[in-house]
Image: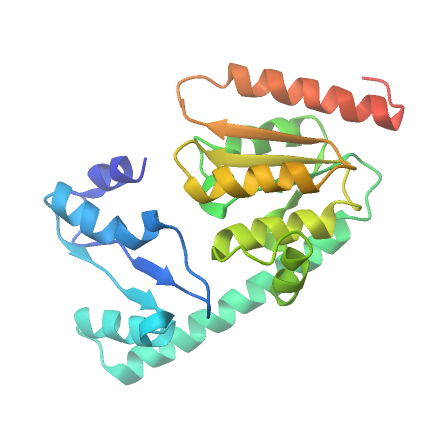
Length: 246
């Protein structure tokens, strides 16, 4: 899907930004797909690419990465630094607002479903949006795993496993542990080739027992029918547990 996005853009942009992410948090790393994405794309597709490289294991921080990106675009360090600080502040404001909205969402009497997965899957039009649209259409309150307070990710994840070192998987597992007694059900959204998910999803299934969980693995983007059928059955189960009429 990513390569398809790039092919769609290649003749419409001056540059295509493909970052390389290895370690974005101390003592953690992201999966190999992010490690190799820039090199893979550059070798397969003839286009003008720019990138930045974040790897805390070698001291390449986010700030340094963005300053280097600004330099590649012909901007001064001062201008790039000011842009970085402004964007970081706006990002923090957005995250605080999302956390506030999520706390309010937990107060509703509607069925509450934790939608757990990596944001690039949850919000993609061909993957997670299928699930989001169905739940919203059926008046289900969605709780999003990536909107958990980031200050509690380590402590919440450690209650399930202390051995997980993938940053994105830790966020998903932390949210599941934190929201398991606050939601009526959990939907795990994964992409078929995801190695870390194949391990963490099994761990979640063994550790979390007191709430209904369904795992949706997306490998075929041609039809929504199978996904909708499974969602209908899952919501029926939750309604029966709550004693609600369909």
